[in-house]
Image (cartoon, rainbow, N blue to C red; front, top):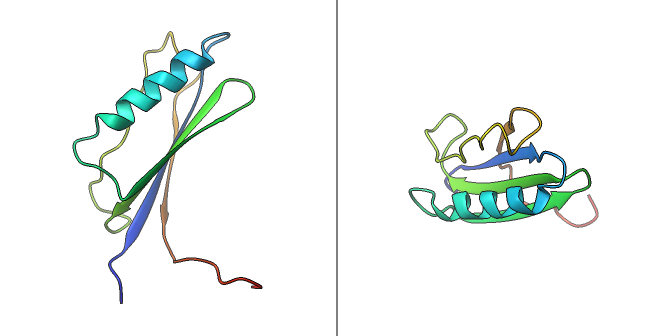
Length: 94
């Protein structure tokens, strides 16, 4: 059996007109994590939303590096965070 993997999702919404700034802020913070994740991805969506997903070698409850909260002037609300335990890839046709 392979070691457990956990995905951390971090999502924030920028204040009006600051989506590009939030995107770059998130990119920089992801690059500064204390250790590199197995994989990471940076995404954006309408309404200046930014999503960062990092995958880690570790169990759901492990202490894993997370992105911090941006300054209140850059976001419209508190950051949303989710944690997911990886169950492996989905087989085609299922």
